[in-house]
Amino acid sequence: MNKYDLIVIGAGPSGYAAAMRALDFKKKILLIEKNNVGGAGVTNGALSSKTWWELSREASAFRKNLKRFNIEIPSINYKEIQEEVRKAVSERMMLLEEHMDSLKNSNYSNLLDFKSGTARLLTQHEVEISVGAQTEKVWGDYIVLATGSRPRFLPELPIDEKTVMTSEGIENMEEFPESMVIVGAGVIGCEYATIFSGFGKTKVHLIDKGDRILPFEDEDVVRIIERNMENNGVLIHRNSKLIHMEIKNGRVEYELEYTDGSREKFNVAKALVSVGRVANIEDLWEDKVGINITKRGIDNNDTQTNVTNIYAVGDLTADISLVNVGELEGRYAVEKMFGDPDRKLVYENISTIMFLSPEVAGVGLNETQAKEKGIDYKVVTLEYSTIPRAIAMRNTQGFIKLLVTSDNEMKILGMKVVGNNASSAIQAVAVLISMDKGIEELAECVHPHPSITEGIQECVRMLMGKSLFKPSALRGRLSCRTYSKGVYADIIF
Image: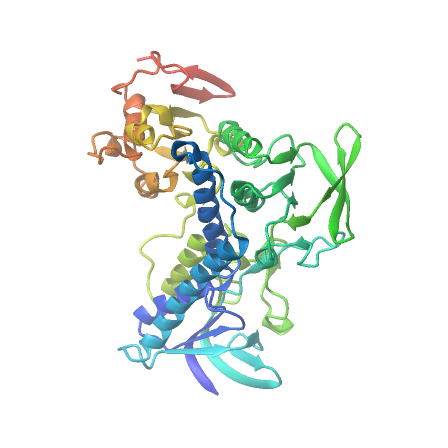
């Protein structure tokens, strides 16, 4: 039986990151994957869907600018778009595989083994690998479980991955559907609504059980996203509950019941079910291994399960299901095994981005979360229309919102940026949150001009009473307020 210092089950973002971090400690590693290297983070998740989003955004922007060039709207070839997405996925997978192959001819040549197959824990150290009818047993001092997740199925819906699909089947369509209903108005559902409405070929319906999409987000963020969706032809079914769906004559018929008791039927070409994901833990270990699980995933303490040599990372845990979080957890788990992590694993400074129209990036708390926690805070908001770079881009839709503690230290609680280049504007704030620093660090930093990050600096200067634009003079575009016990009050300098 071959023995390893570490066996990693799953070669998605978190498992791959764990294996590569273990190489830094010169450990003997086995990486096992039953499908594709890169996992759902590449093949039918983050990379593929974001490539669709980029191409959709290009198509939408092109249509909006046709009048400048006196050009009629050209047709969009679905097959070519689909092939471009597949090329992006292939490029990333080939890079990961090339990297592993190249390691064989490097100073890591005797440290990393890779096996294709289905892995199962027999004991806390023994792993059985199955490929068809053949099996092999290996031993690991430490085990990292990183088998990821899959779309959640609703048994009452006729999901066949052809007419009624999840994110695993939607990219296999042969053409743009003339209409589509999306079940679930969370991040993924809203991203796909943005993608397909952006191409201008599909009438999108979005089912929302509440009175607005993205219920975890602040109202001012949602207001912009909803307006843009509806301007792109998206029909948002607010305050609705899906009570029936069936496939009829190759199309989808569904019925909704609204909160007022009324009902309505609709008929569309396709349906996408986007109601979350579930961890891939079935048959992953024998009962005698004794790993504790909860309703949300594998129970763990900073990635370590109740079985001390076994760690769980990525979508298997109850933490945030994001590629960057999974990679962070994979690296951290290895550092706990073989080293001494420089800092505790924290999630307060995790940067996020929603690929909507416009994109939404954030870090730390938003106002909704701060209120739920009973935190008093100061909040400053600055519209894109006051930022030279946004004016130059000829798109001033969006804003920057910064939350800080209500005391004199004004430590950063969180930030949200809605608009073009939003994701490029938040990293400095994420670092300050992790350092538990106040806003003065950003006040006099020299930013490139023109840039979106200049808007962050102006937010900080507003809080410090020395901004270029005064909130009282540009009401509606700027605001600087305190929030305490349900009451807002303007900050007057």
